[in-house]
Length: 75
Length: 258
Image 1: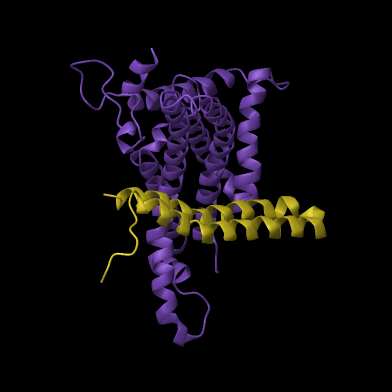
Image 2: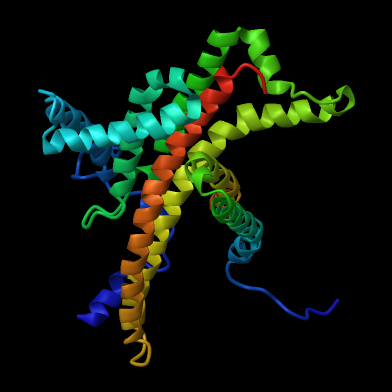
């Protein structure tokens, strides 16, 4: 089979870019929901805030695993 | 001048940049800037809280007010709001954890220091291990081993879905929790330091490349300053998240049912 195209350089960077799509959408959804919840029920903002950060941290972990594994499996 | 700089700029930044040489020739290889920074962080915390709370006044002095604000913040928004009223007994540990992580992270943007010990996995790993042992110990002490396992592993669900749910719950509670706790803090500090390195060193590389690219290096250094502010936000956020997650794991271990 003839070689049509070749990727050189760090493919880990491309992989990480792909891996960041999901967490990006997820973090966006979390903050969107928080803004919406606060707009509907302003008194609940302090109540829901810790859960925003917990949810943010849990979703963001996926993107950060990408950073860590990118370096672990780069070589 | 610029040609001699070009030879010195280590480009691209790599993992090697995190392993600093020993402070002085002939000392042990582990005695690096990282080790000194951990000692400094511990010393600052101990001295700060001892000095500010040596003679507590009813009308607090300025320093006492700062210490009380930090403690009050963690006690009220993390310990009490998340764990409940019996969670106030964890406030001293949570405050220490918050201050320690915050201070260690803060080293990554302090000029001339600019590396955080937390960008080495060892330090977040130990902190995560302490949290892991803490919430498991509390859960077992509160409920006994069998009931704690049942509480944390068997969710209220139809029996036929349990063979799938129990392994998932086991992995998320006992394997992924300490792992993500450590890796989250580590990766944030690692990535933050790496980004600052890319833009600082990238400026030097561009300055030395072609006359056309040299002016762009100013833009690169401006980006470094902007990203330092972003990093400042990440630092506080990660210290808060580490504390909040520890508190929420403790709350989950102490809770009666799901």
